Image (cartoon, rainbow, N blue to C red; front, side):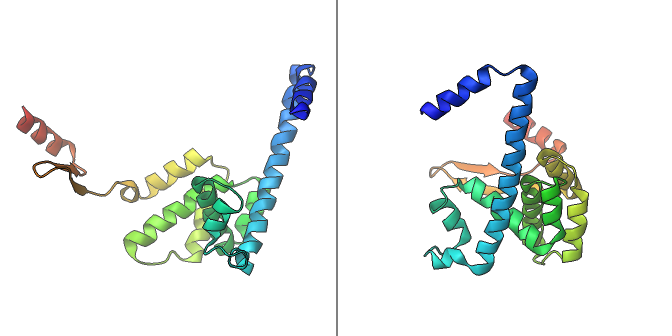
Length: 186
């Protein structure tokens, strides 16, 4: 705790410009460390070290051994899948042209597309998708893929029995059908 207080005291005396530069240095180090971790995880996955440690999957190892959140583990695994499929993506990650978040968004899009079509997305298509997300934020990447195939992002229709008499229904409706339902409710 004393180290943290000492560090805070050092920051307090910095000028605004020096403080901004110091934090920028931290962000640069964080990015380099994050990239190194991802590349290290790629080797762990290749060697199946998670099995050697007694974990059934890389996901379990990331959560239980490295204490990542499920979302953090999922994001790293998704990014790894892209790096494995498109090796150039690793160089783009290190250069900052793509981020772990944008690679993860891309893999989520691919997962949805493969689930809907029942076919694997070709490596050539994955390379093209990597090019499409260069220099985009996670939000811009998400929006790009929504625009590319809006139907992949629609929630599924579902029914859920709540009681004997009540059922919760979730479905997609166009504006015309919404008007009909409003009329029925009135």
